[in-house]
Image (tube, rainbow, N blue to C red; front, side):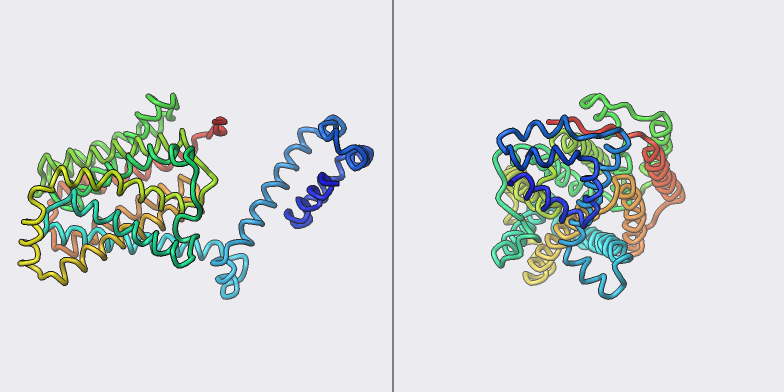
Length: 396
């Protein structure tokens, strides 16, 4: 009886589509299950399945899961009342992308503005994740668990998240050191080399081969970065090398995420725990790197801009950082990795040119051409990866 009831519940969850799958089960098998619940393992040999039927059953289960996911998405349900159920998913996804872009641009501009009067990138990086953690705790405390941690994770899940999260924290610090040292446009141009690190680390650690077209597309990226770096007026080795270090750590983050990916957490919850781990890593590193001169730096910054602006800017930049990353995670959950890569290319273009306009930055012709070539190479890489066949993930 328990097995029959379970089958009925599964049928309801698939919105009636699963009823077709029951036609492939011999009636005697169902009767045998009802009469002999102590021998449920005998059901399998009596199920008549062909490869075609297996594929059909797979589609049924997947369709039912997709339908169930849409049913529990309150945002899509609300949007569907305005634009209709067919357009709801697309509108929500585009909304996530628009917010991701807007928050990311706002973060980059405010972050660079802070570094002009408070050049403490280790401390500012730590403030980013502390504000994010406070936001997550506040959301959880008022009952909005879906906008925060979601649920308490196990030690095993924490262990899986820790590796990628630690690389996220270190890469974030490295990127901010670069932002403080050179123009935003140069840092983001150098960061277009991130796919090259992903390809190299995937080969060395996972043994994954990258198609030749994708490897060749890395050539214009490297050429463009070299041209932009050579032609950038604000170039210095600290900014360049820390941007490269950020690429390396984010490459490790991507590879380790593949090795220890967990699908039991929503994207928002995953990023909330990533923020928690980042705080545990960033706080001691910031105290070691800048703790001895921090109070003096705070005094100088307050003397320049005032206490109210200083603390307000730090809070806002931390909130912008957390929210733009949260929407980036939300977007990745709704689109394919390739589509997410395309969005990243467009986002980088928007950040580079908005920063040039906002800070009235002078870009040499060589730097501009190099930046465009590097971004174009990133798009070619994304297109090449799109054609790569993806093997099913191995069981842990």
